[in-house]
Length: 316
Image 1 (cartoon, rainbow, N blue to C red):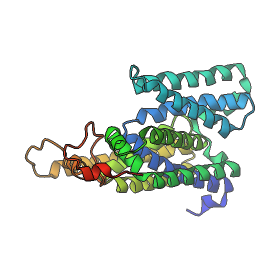
Image 2: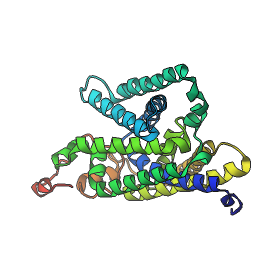
Image 3: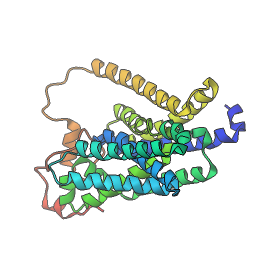
Image 4: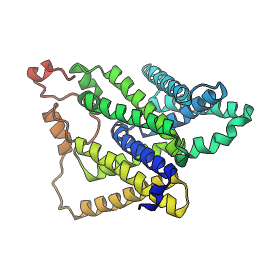
């Protein structure tokens, strides 16, 4: 355990991986519950185009990639609001176009090809002090924003239509969340690479979902799993001499497989329950619209028993 810590590059990589694992775990919960797993994969490819553009035009990498990612997300939101085009189709068009721009520029400016492997698969052992501070800043910002906007984010995640009735500015919250996602992906690029970021975001959250039905517990558990898998993956990659980012994802996937098997065994051992028309977790959400500690899926309709007292309250 102590031997790898003698190397500064490993210490930097370990800190960066832990921060990225934690913040990806937090963001991943909202991604999974919003059923937006595909956007993490797509956006990482779009940001790759921004990274190449930044390199070619000699912009700051993080500034250029950040602006590109934010623009891509806002463009996706703008297109999907027209209702005629689904979110999955808009993401497919915008993100693949962004990736194609990066590939086209890379083919013309061959000097970027030396950084191609790091951009696609990560270079966690090459994390600089500047990059480490940037990752720390993003992680702290995302955690603070999640804490400050906990209730609006939660409410808009489960039922955007009802949240809007209660006074939640759903569009602004969605925009804030997409910018948080973009910042997380940009901070994770050097650690995980474009091809593996989506796995780092989704797997810990899905694993946590198997182990708990409580939203706030899922947040903490997903973040802890992200940090744990990152640390274990770093040590395994050091001793096995294989890619750190790939090892982290494989550790996460293995943990998910174990969690899934345990979950299935428990489900089969449970006694038969009379048919229920609705998930009791969903009922708890309907009966207590301000107590979103349990969840099953995103609601598609308002609670039939909302009282005037509830209607007057405003979530902030």
